[in-house]
Image (cartoon, rainbow, N blue to C red; front, side, top):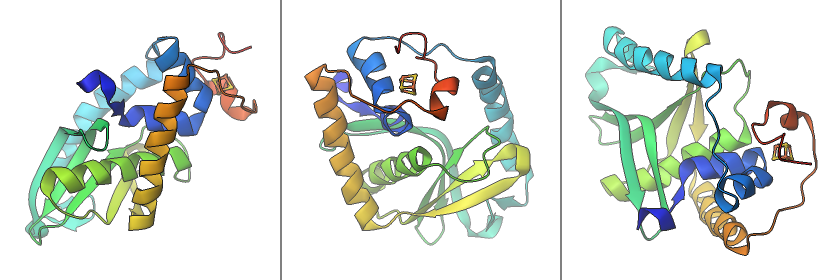
Length: 193
Ligand code: SF4
């Protein structure tokens, strides 16, 4: 059952702050979309249209690309994980490459974004019976993409992360965390004393 599975976004939130997962999964508090997130969705749809208009697909020549799939929903029961990949590029060589689009001014790729791409890689491995070794984070506002290598070790650690996050949810305990800069952008700050 899908409700027994962890969502990839739960992993992203956990690596933003484990306590966010407690608020969302244990107490059932939903994140209300911020205007920026709404704007992100509109931009997201536009971005999918723009991919068709470009001569290259996230740096790959059109000639090398067999298929581009947007919003691919994937799950793996044995991993206990599901999610929706922004863009999945299938190259003619057979390589499968996930792309995650970020509407952010960040200069560098954050740890939680790397974890998110690694989770997509694991899901795509089993979905396409392949081995994903790299993915991209793409920043539309800067027309910039950053390559992320996804080695086997990162996938093995991610599987442990999934188990750890499930244990946290099952424990129903609020985790101890250090408050910091991330709290000012956190949708849970009014609940988090
Ligand atoms: S307010 Fe800070 S400590 Fe609380 S959940 Fe958000 S990021 Fe974590």
